[in-house]
Length: 90
Image 1 (tube, rainbow, N blue to C red):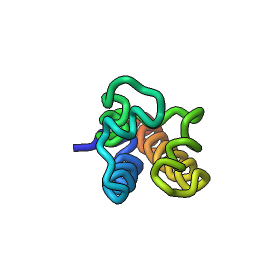
Image 2 (tube, helix red, strand yellow):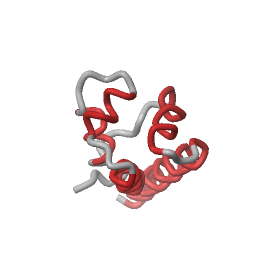
Image 3 (tube, one colour):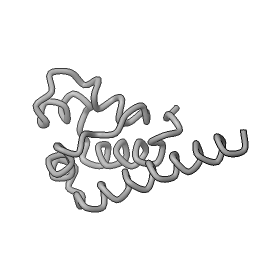
Image 4 (cartoon, rainbow, N blue to C red):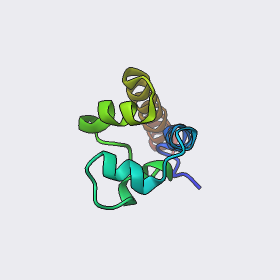
Protein backbone atom coordinates (compact mmCIF):
# COMPACT_ATOMS: atom_id res chain seq x y z
CA UNK A 1 0.00 0.00 0.00
CA UNK A 2 1.32 3.43 -0.91
CA UNK A 3 2.28 5.92 1.74
CA UNK A 4 -0.24 8.78 1.74
CA UNK A 5 2.33 11.44 0.81
CA UNK A 6 3.06 10.28 -2.75
CA UNK A 7 0.22 7.82 -3.40
CA UNK A 8 -0.86 9.20 -6.77
CA UNK A 9 2.71 9.50 -8.07
CA UNK A 10 3.43 6.00 -6.76
CA UNK A 11 0.59 4.47 -8.77
CA UNK A 12 1.48 6.51 -11.85
CA UNK A 13 5.12 5.36 -11.75
CA UNK A 14 4.22 1.73 -11.24
CA UNK A 15 1.73 1.84 -14.12
CA UNK A 16 4.29 3.55 -16.39
CA UNK A 17 6.95 0.95 -15.55
CA UNK A 18 4.63 -1.98 -16.13
CA UNK A 19 3.46 -0.48 -19.44
CA UNK A 20 7.09 -0.68 -20.60
CA UNK A 21 7.40 -4.26 -19.24
CA UNK A 22 10.36 -3.26 -17.08
CA UNK A 23 11.31 -4.70 -13.72
CA UNK A 24 12.21 -2.40 -10.86
CA UNK A 25 15.81 -3.62 -11.16
CA UNK A 26 15.94 -2.80 -14.88
CA UNK A 27 14.74 0.74 -14.17
CA UNK A 28 17.24 1.09 -11.34
CA UNK A 29 20.11 0.03 -13.60
CA UNK A 30 19.01 2.40 -16.38
CA UNK A 31 19.12 5.23 -13.82
CA UNK A 32 22.52 4.22 -12.45
CA UNK A 33 21.37 2.63 -9.19
CA UNK A 34 22.76 -0.69 -7.97
CA UNK A 35 19.58 -1.67 -6.15
CA UNK A 36 15.89 -1.59 -6.97
CA UNK A 37 15.06 -0.24 -3.50
CA UNK A 38 14.82 3.33 -4.80
CA UNK A 39 12.26 2.36 -7.44
CA UNK A 40 10.36 0.26 -4.91
CA UNK A 41 10.21 3.20 -2.50
CA UNK A 42 8.83 5.45 -5.25
CA UNK A 43 6.17 2.92 -6.17
CA UNK A 44 5.14 2.41 -2.55
CA UNK A 45 4.82 6.15 -2.03
CA UNK A 46 7.56 6.27 0.59
CA UNK A 47 9.65 8.70 -1.44
CA UNK A 48 9.53 10.69 -4.62
CA UNK A 49 12.19 10.42 -7.33
CA UNK A 50 14.89 13.09 -6.96
CA UNK A 51 14.38 16.08 -9.23
CA UNK A 52 17.83 15.45 -10.73
CA UNK A 53 16.69 12.19 -12.33
CA UNK A 54 13.13 13.07 -13.38
CA UNK A 55 14.03 13.70 -17.02
CA UNK A 56 15.93 10.41 -17.27
CA UNK A 57 13.12 8.53 -15.55
CA UNK A 58 10.56 10.06 -17.89
CA UNK A 59 12.68 9.02 -20.86
CA UNK A 60 12.96 5.43 -19.57
CA UNK A 61 9.18 5.29 -19.17
CA UNK A 62 8.44 7.15 -22.39
CA UNK A 63 6.42 9.81 -20.59
CA UNK A 64 6.55 13.60 -20.48
CA UNK A 65 8.99 14.84 -17.83
CA UNK A 66 7.02 18.00 -17.20
CA UNK A 67 3.89 15.91 -16.54
CA UNK A 68 5.78 13.75 -14.07
CA UNK A 69 7.14 16.83 -12.31
CA UNK A 70 3.63 18.35 -12.15
CA UNK A 71 2.23 15.15 -10.63
CA UNK A 72 4.86 15.18 -7.93
CA UNK A 73 4.14 18.83 -7.15
CA UNK A 74 0.40 18.15 -6.98
CA UNK A 75 0.84 15.20 -4.63
CA UNK A 76 3.21 17.19 -2.43
CA UNK A 77 0.85 20.17 -2.26
CA UNK A 78 -2.11 17.92 -1.45
CA UNK A 79 -0.25 16.29 1.40
CA UNK A 80 1.08 19.59 2.75
CA UNK A 81 -2.44 21.06 2.77
CA UNK A 82 -3.74 18.01 4.59
CA UNK A 83 -0.99 18.23 7.21
CA UNK A 84 -1.55 21.97 7.58
CA UNK A 85 -5.29 21.53 8.14
CA UNK A 86 -4.66 18.80 10.69
CA UNK A 87 -2.24 21.06 12.51
CA UNK A 88 -4.65 23.97 12.49
CA UNK A 89 -7.65 22.00 13.68
CA UNK A 90 -5.82 19.41 15.77
